Length: 336
Image 1 (cartoon, rainbow, N blue to C red):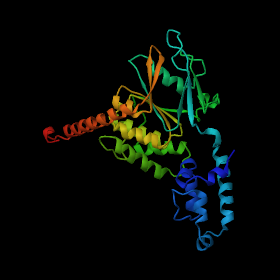
Image 2: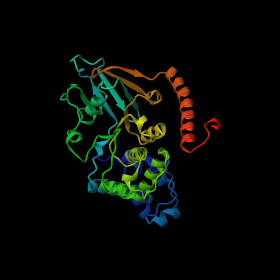
Image 3: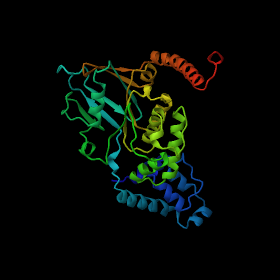
Image 4: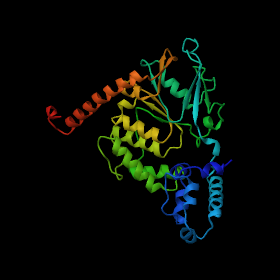
């Protein structure tokens, strides 16, 4: 059920992120000079008599009209107010020998990065699959997934319109013959986005910031390189996807600026789980899950000492990136 007292206290940029249709409302009703970092209520209280006369409404009536509009749009679009996923919990199961995993419960909150490390074939993909399918003691690992600390609604498992997880895999091949812009328009339309032009522009710009080689909106998606494809899907997932959890498999092989990719995903307040062998990425995470023999061996919290190591790795990585770019563009490496 809509809680309008909470909505009144939301900053305008937060409100637009949650209810994108409000941009159309503000534009249609000539709301000018909105302060995006102030709450809806604060913006309304700042209106002077001249602005109220221009809007043709009393101050006390504005919030009532907005409340009614949001209620109608939520009903029309079929938005479920309890869809927010603020945390997931992984309850321990067993490894491939049937032994109990060496933890009880791992709770991951929105905005956290959790890395998954372990030898090839150790079970990293199985853990990602358990989360994607919202395991309920019915997978080979016998794990259980909770959402917001509770048994999840079955819609997260069985409804194609309520996908809990967006997964970015190593291998990505487009088969549709569409331009980048047409592809994004189709996706935006399926999400009932109110401001597709603005979002598509943002996705293309963000993807080009991540990719080594820039592409145009008219570029056919089948002509994108591997790195450009991954950059496009990372930006699309961060900005357009409603899935609250992102699972990433070895982003270090994506050919993109991996640190900026993570910053983009976290900036959209998602839970990010990332299987990786890259020490810099592993130390960017809040915690890392160590997998072996199909089970979770231990969970390590990133220490302050490790964050100092991360600073050294970032210097080395910046140097390597500079040398790679120099090589790519035919420069003499001794000058870099």
